[in-house]
Amino acid sequence: MRSVVLVLSLLLSAVAVAALIAPRQTTPVRSGSTADSSLLDSLLRSDAQLATIARRADEYEVQIIYTQINRDEQNQPHFTQHSFHLNAQQYFNPASLVKLPVAALALEKLNNLNQPGLHRNSPLAIGTAFRCQTGVPYSTSPDLDRLNTVGNYVKRMLLVSDNVAYNRLYEFLGQGPLNKRLWNLGYPLARITRRFVPCDTAANRHTNPFTFYSQEGQPIYQQPAAVNTEKLGFPLGRIVKGQAYQAGGRLIREPYDFTTANYLPLQDITNVLKAVVFPESIPQNQQFSLSSNDYRFLRRYLHQTPHGSGFSLYKAPSFYDAYKKYFYYGRNPTAPGQSGLHIYNVVGMSHGYLADVAYFADSTQRVEFMLSAVIYVNKDGILNDGSYEYATVGLPFLKNLGRKIYQYETTRPYLIKPNLKGFFTEQEQTAE
Image (tube, rainbow, N blue to C red; front, side):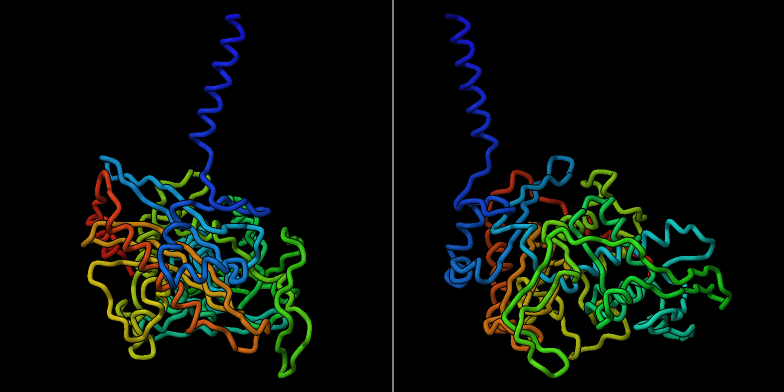
C-alpha cells in the first residue's frame, strides 16, 4: 500500500512540475512554430489597429518576438521571451537584416587575421576575378569617411542599410567561411548566399581579391580571390512565393523562387542582436570574437541616426532621423525623436517583406526590452513590381507595435529598475 501511495505521490508531483514549466498557449502550435505567448497575444488584441493584423496573421505572415529584460541587484540582465506566430520554417526574405551578422563577422575576421597594422580603418582596394564582380581602386581622401575601409562599410550598412557596403563585406568574408561561421555560432538554418546585385548562383560563390594598405599607402595584407566549392544546401527545401513576378520588363506568370536566396530566421537575427548588445549574456561558444571596442563600435552605429552620427556622407533631409527606425517612428521623415529613447536596430525591406529587430532602452523612463517583427504586405501577389503596402499597412503596423510594447513597458512593474547610465556612457567612448 505504501508503495502505491508513493508512486501516486511522485506522479502528482511530476504533473505539477510539468504544469509550471509548460508554455501557456492561446492558439494551437503550427508545424515548426513556437506556442504563442498569452501576454503578447493579449497586447496585440487590446489595440484596434494591431488586432486587425493579428486576426489575419497567417495572411500577413506576421512573426513577433518580444523579450522582457529584468535586472538583478548587480544590474545583470535576465531575459523572458514572448512570441507570436514564430516559426523558423516559415520563410521570409530577410533583406538587410543579414547586414548585422556580416558586419560583426567582418570585424571578427580582422581580429583573427592578426596582421600588424591591419584594423577596421585600414584603406583597401578590391580586384575582380569572375563575372559579376566589380573593383574598388585604392584611394586617399582628407575626408576619412570617404575612404574604403571595413569600418566605413560597417557604418554605411548600419546607418542607412547601404547595399554596396554589404556586398563588399560579403566578398571580404567569402560565401563558404561566412556561412560556416554562422553555423558554428549556433545558427544552422542561416544562409547568406547572395550579394545585393543580380548575380547568378555560381557568381555569388566567387568572391574578389582584396588588398589592405597602411596609412602610408604600403600593402600590408593581400587576400586572394576565393570560391566556395561546397554546396550549402537549403533546409527549408524549395520556396516559392506569390502568383507572378516582374523580370526584365516582363510579367512572368509563375511564383517567384526564393530557394537559393538569403535566409535568416527571426529568432536567429534576434539572437545576433542580443549577442552584440549583451555579449556577456551569451554562452562563450556563441560569442563573436570581438574586442570591447568592436562591440561599442557596432552598438554606436546601430543606435545613431544618419546625420546624428556625424558621418559626412549622410546629410538631412535625404537621410532623416527615422530613416532606419521602423518601430515606434514608422520611418516618418518628420517624426521628432523622443528624448531619452535609444533604439539599437537593424531593418529589412524587400519583396513585400518589412522587418525590424531592435533593442529599446530609455534612460528617462528606465525601461528596456527587445522587439523583433516581420510582416508581408503584397496584396496583388506579384513580386518585384514595386507595388507593396509598405506605407499603408507595414510601417504603420511596426510603428504601432513598437509604441504598444513601449507603453506597456513603462507601466509594467520592475522589481529592480535598470541602471543604463553606464551603458550609454560606454557607447560614447567608441574609437573611430
